[in-house]
Length: 177
Image (cartoon, rainbow, N blue to C red; front, side):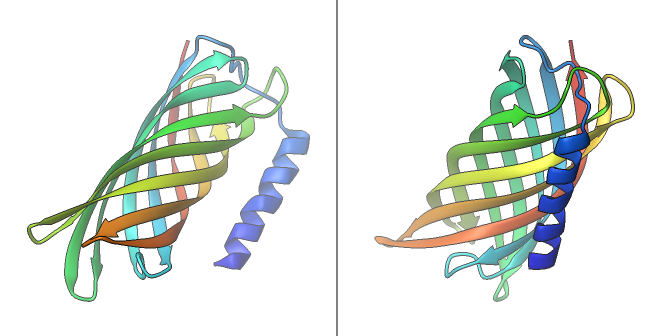
């Protein structure tokens, strides 16, 4: 897993140096949809799962967007089926020049959600760091790669359990002007 993260970081640096940009000017809206493979780390998340994450973002300034991502996840841990739903407010910075169809980004987010199993529901808070590269087919539609780490605090029966989730994913991105 560490080798994959290092590979993605190396690709991000390489493409950052060579990247042309896309018109990520203020006023642009974009939608994204991602599918993640996830490996949990810590006492709160000793598991593996798949996650679907749609998002909506708006560029306030050139190369700087704000928006939200939804995380919809279902996983099995120790024979129990869990459903997790969360929303994160994200800020992202896109790198590159004024022309081209490849541009990397880095993002940070904060939010929370609910983890439910059987008839129990637990609230939690999340911090997320994400980085990736968008590969556009044209000015509007493309594929993206993403690696992220999310840190959660889950309260259960008065006890707070913490853990992180390392995610590797890919998805689609659609820019609207």
